[in-house]
Length: 250
Ligand SMILES: [Zn+2]
Image 1: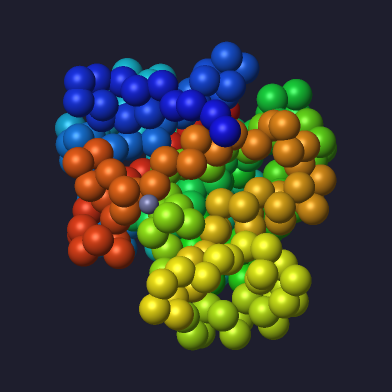
Image 2: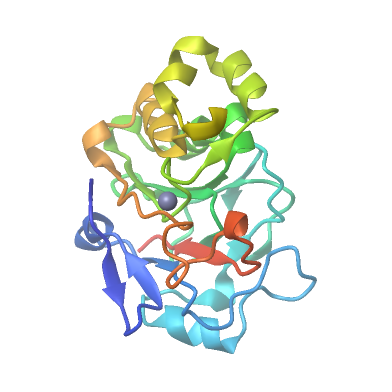
C-alpha cells in the first residue's frame, strides 16, 4: 500500500511519492483537471487548460505521444515523436522530455521506469489487456530499451478496485483460460447474489512480479475510481470523462 500526493484544492492531479523522489516528471489526473478529452477524438485530447495544469508537474504536452487505445497488448515501441502512436495499449520511449500518456476511467494505467537505463513504458490495462498480457508486454518493451526488470519502478494509477469490480462472462472464461483456475480463485471473491468481484490490482501486481519486477518497487495506492465519484471518473459508474496518466523521462 502506498500513498499519492495531491496537487491543487480540490486535487487536479496526483503524483507518486516514490517516482517524484527518484526524479520522474509524471501525473495522474482527477476529474478536476480541466481540458482532458478522449484519445479517440480527432483533435488533440489535451486543450490549453490541461497543458497548463500538467506543465506544473514538469510535463511539456506539446510533445506528448498517446494511442488510440484498443484493449490489447500491442506496443508502439521506442517512440521518438509526439502525436498519435497508433492503435496500441503500450507506449515506450528513451526520448527525454517527451511525455507518454495513457487514458483511463476504471482501467489501470501502469507506469514502468528504469532510471539508470533511461527507459520508460506506459500501459493501458483493463480486463482484456490483463488477459492478453499487456503488463508483461510493457515490461518487455522497457527491457527492449535496456531496462532491467528488477530495476524498474512501477506505479498503478487510480482504477477500479475489487470493492466495485463485478464481472461475469466473458471475463471468467477468458481469465481461466489465460491463467488457470488457481489464479482466478486467488484474484476473485464471491459477493452476494452470485456475483464475482475481480481484483485487477493484485492480478497485475502478480503479473508484473512474474515478469521480474520487484514487488517492493510496485506503487499501488489502491484508490478506486468507482468509490470516489467526487474525485475520479468511473466508466462503470456512468461517467464519460477520462483520467490521464502522463510521464516523461527526465
Ligand atoms: Zn471501489
